[in-house]
Image 1: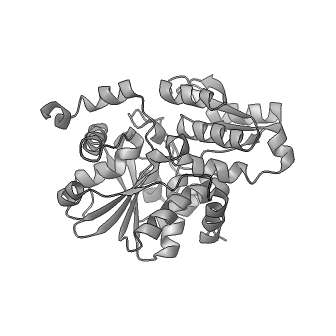
Image 2 (image 1 turned 90 degrees about the horizontal axis):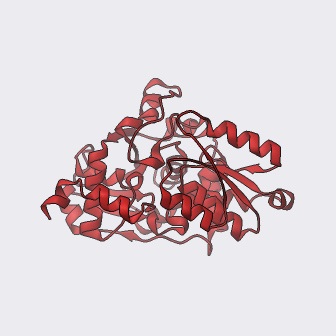
Image 3 (image 1 turned 30 degrees about the horizontal axis):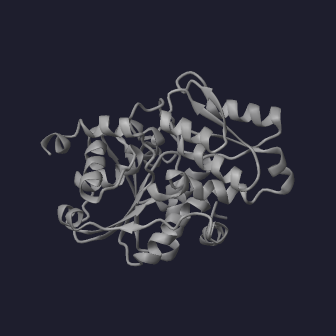
Length: 326
C-alpha cells in the first residue's frame, strides 16, 4: 500500500480550499529564451507564511480531533514549517510550540513569534531537534506535527503540484526542491498520477545531497548537517516515509552550488521582480546552469518560499556577478 495516493492529495486540496492561497503560476520570456524551454514557476513565496509549508501544516492540524487541538501542537523547523504551524494553529484555535535552531534567520524567528508560536531554541550543530521535540511532546501532552515525515503533511504539500498541473496540464518535467522530502513526495504523487509520463526531478544544494546519495544507494544515507545558504534544505537524512515515496517516483536528483543559487535569486528579482529565498531558487538555478537537458520541454518549477529578510537578501545578491554588473 503506498504511503500516500492521489486521493490523499485531493482530500487535502478540499481542506485547504478557501484557506490556503492558490499561488500564481508565473512565466518569463527571458527565462524561456535562456533555457530554450517553456517554464512555469509556481510561486509559493506568495503562500500564507511565505512558503509551501502552510499546505501540509494546515492539512495535518485540521485533521486532529478536538482533544488534540485542546492540548496543542509542537513542531521543529528551521523556519518555514515553524511559521506554517503557528499560523495553522492560530486559525484552528490551538497553541503551537516550535523548536527552532538558534541560528535560524531572524526574519523567520520573528515571524514565528508574531504568528503566536512559542519558540524553544536549540543548537543545530550539537543537539537533536527530533529528540527535543519528542521529549516536549511527551512532557506537555502535545501533538507532534512533523515537517515532512507524515502522510497528511506530504499530501498537503502535494497540492502545489495539483494546482500547477491544473494551469499547465502538459508538463514534461517538474522541478522541486528537496530537504526531508515531503514537498517532492507529495508533488510526485500528484504529478505521476495525473500525468504518468512526467519526469520529476529533485534539486538539492551541493553540500546537502543526502537524498541524491540515498536514492543511488537504495537506502537512507545520513550526512553531517549541511553548511549551505539554503537553510530550508539542511535535513541531514531523508525522512523514512518520504524516502519510500521518492525512491519510487522521483526520476533524478541534481545539485547546485550556493553561488548558483544566489545567481538564480538575482535573476528572479531582476527579471521577474520575485523575492525568493535560497531554498526556493534551487530549481531555477538548475535550469540556468544547464544541469538538466530541458531544451524544448514544458517545465514546472516550484519556487518553494520567499522567507528571507531584506538585509540578508541584499547581502546575498550583492555577491552575484549579475548584480555587480547591473
